[in-house]
Length: 99
Image (cartoon, rainbow, N blue to C red; front, side, top):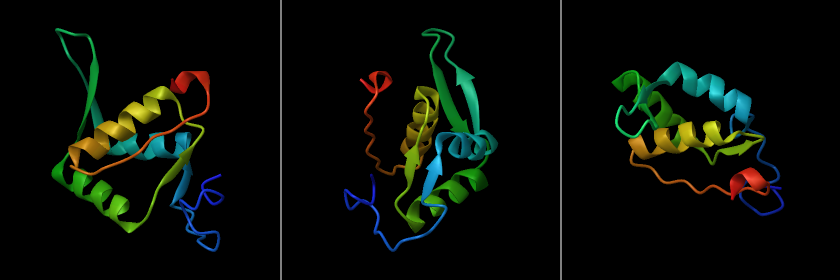
């Protein structure tokens, strides 16, 4: 779908640019730590170190990242990580969980 929409080029074959939600989750679990807000009960994510943050920023700067089959938690982690690097992202979905 990403190729059909022109998000990534059809000849582009970088395996790191199209990843599953599970692959993304495994990577982010190494870079982020979860914090629970005592007042709201909500969850936030922070990078475990400055180096982890820089590694993630370098990954974002290399190419467009397309993630497929990810859970709402995966999306939460991903957006939190992107926000923490002052970068920009767009999310879309087609299932009832994405409303």
